[in-house]
Length: 420
Ligand code: EPZ
Image 1 (tube, rainbow, N blue to C red):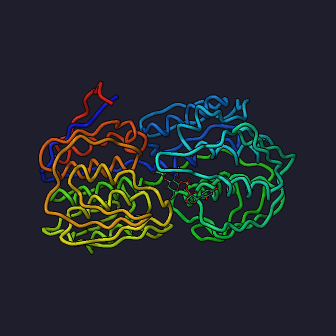
Image 2: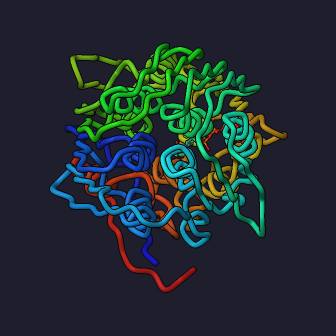
Image 3: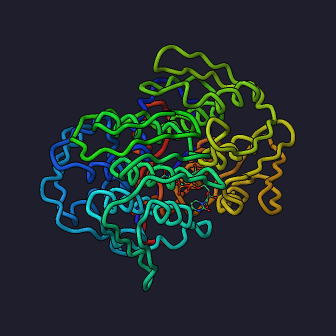
């Protein structure tokens, strides 16, 4: 397994290009199951999770060709309708095949995702919604077994906003007979990107960008080509790196309007932000001001930025409170950040951070994707050389992170590690 060696304290300056959004690609790729033919998915990031989705869809008969960031997809020969445990346990987003399979082929066998590094990740909302559309669903030895002659439109009201459940329900409803109304739908940009793709395939969907989606089922869809939106979480992560390490960095190929909540908080923390088109420049504050954050569904402050914000606040001049209302137990980064000298008191889903002037290097362990990002950020600012182990977690969702950070002046290198 690899580890990162990071010598902290270097000022960052220069440009960092943002890749396509992991969480958009993981929805756009299974959407190709909805119609046979050839697709071009532009700006697709080269990530472990994308490759896991490629393996899963290939096991169903889908073929792929990658040319730089364009992923060509061919769904002429889909002949299997199962998402086996070995794929799903690696990546929860594999559940996204359920909606298109049941809607296009009337059958699906998808492993339950189980938990992840920070706790249970239920899929009850996905199952209930697809049942409401007329599918027969049973859970058998860890698998969701779904069958349906023809799905029928229905009214679906989610009691909580769920990105995945909204995506799966959309992909089930577009080929159902009649109309479907989804209330309390997720409005994350990745869902908007999926809706754009479905509409360009011939789907009839109203309410894009809102919590009320109305879908008129159609007989058939056709392939399309679509551009994946920029990764707003990578963008936010890199901006926090700029805020923590002093200096000034510009992120390019991003969508500033997708990170408004993060930009506002960075300004409150004293950073200077300049937006021009698809670029954002951040000048680090001399003193980082303490800023409380409570994660919310979009357009609120994203839970996927919670860990990175705690890293920033560990260097603030004063105390701050970070509350995660989406995942109550998504704090596996806290004990590792404490090893780097961060002063954090965690009670349930509330992290109280007492900022300090500096962090110090240590050996730390990645536990999940965004927790690992938080460790990298802290290590970039910590005095001395930090070793971050199990960085395969990072490779799931950050394309060539060490190259991108090195291009802005960071002293970070990837080395093989026998330890851990
Ligand atoms: C998506 O996960 C993202 N993943 C996550 O990003 C992100 O943290 C999450 O949305 C929230 O924004 C992808 O898009 C691939 P949810 P998803 O369904 O769809 C509860 C990353 O780091 N819930 O919106 O799985 C759930 O437990 C990943 O890139 C149910 O109770 O998240 C959570 O508390 C991590 N039942 C809340 O809803 C369900 O059936 C929101 O989850 C589904 C969800």
